[in-house]
Image (tube, rainbow, N blue to C red; front, side, top):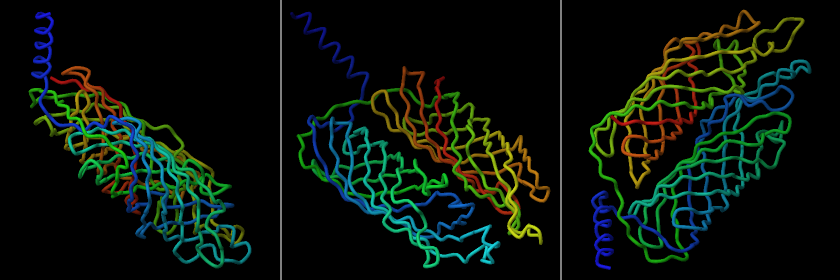
Length: 432
């Protein structure tokens, strides 16, 4: 019996020497929480919304949009919960109506810009995973939003902007929560949404948004918190390399101006794009690192050339050419800083920096000789990533990183067109 007790004590001491103390909050029972929140919404929709019969809208997302709502959360465990609620959201914007076929009936082909109302009543359904670290809790969230359109008016001439009353949207989010006490917490989060069903019955047009959320939540039932201690010791100032592959989703506008006020292309981002590369990381300490590397990226898509000024006496409407293919390939060199938070074998991090893009292929095949796709050989974009890694041991880790890129300098010299993309990276990091 004495030997057994001694063995248990040795194991406990060994475990304690492997870890350092850090307080985590764990709730042992199921609980319900209610909350209120408000959000600022950034519309990431296309610059051209195709509506009905070849008509559409050039968009300008210059209006301040918001969302307010009430949330309900049912906690199944201390780290997993189901969420719902009800929200009111507006996604208003300024639109310029374009009707290529209207010239046949002696009506204007382009109408003056005007405000377009787009208001929803939303019912979200999602699952949320928490990582508690003392009074802080990091979380990720995945789910759907049922959007019931309450107002889509944009003029007395055309009536309603959309011919649908219901849209289904997917959402993915991340955030941080600070517990004021056992009942109250403040929440700060960001949420990306993209339409799963079309905004119009006859066209495949989807809306994308990025929301920044602030809210307060209150627990209706709770249990006294239990404190545990977890944090792995490790010597830092190490180097890591991480080969990776990524799926790339182009969020750029669906209308790309080629020449100012004369021609452009309607883009369809239907191709599967990817990146492969190698990340290099210098771990300065347990929380901060500097990162660079090299990657090969393709950003191919299909396009239809549009020339609004190509009028003749035999063709009184804007000319639309057959669909062609655009191949864009880059060599990329990133430079960023990364901040880590560790919990047991998991590490969560934010990654902020820049990317230099060098074009190594930019082919444009088009039957319209006046519509030249002129792009630069070099441009710079920002990068913002939120990732997680699982440590297999002290030297190997698996990484999953969603990364958002937005062009700082233009891809097309003549019009100042800039790119936008969301990348989902999967890699394996090895420490030296």
